[in-house]
Image (cartoon, rainbow, N blue to C red):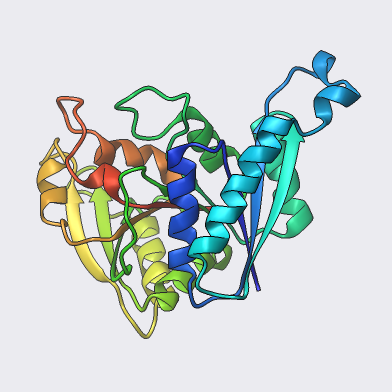
Length: 270
């Protein structure tokens, strides 16, 4: 039984992420933990303030009713949690308490500006919570994940804990993985990068990923690279390499690359 955390602010984006989760794991028994967090300074945390308000309860009731109406797997269970705390504290506590396997959330909430690709809360969870995060765009509609793109510069070692979630999800959907090698110049890869490359390839054995090499010194704008990968269904990054995300969410004119912000983004920790 998988334990999946679904943070929600009851926005359309978080609702879409929850629907995506039910479809993605339609054949997998899951406990879905719905978490709503009200961020509040410590001096306001009175006993009355800690209680779930009627408005929040009503939002939970509506969300649960809707989730049950679209559920296709009777082994999908829903549990609700309301916390008055800072978001990261609440998420970390729930990850420990419920032994969460995956956090699945919208790329942004109702408070983010139009045009923002990844909101501040989602970015914070990706970077600060030691748990895999799958971020779903408000524009994303579920489709089988058959081709997964994994950009890496091989400057970190990918241990088995980091790769476990990716290997499980790829196996779940029988997806092929393409590794996009990112090198800064023609003197790369170094010996260390070669060792990390070999370890990464061995981890996927016997299904060896496709390799695609990209030199940032030759092509400053990744837009051309991404155009050749229009058929991918998901992007995967390690949290330690999350700065690479900027190369694929923006082009040199600082404009959103078409179609990229509609793809699920999986961030790995380990």
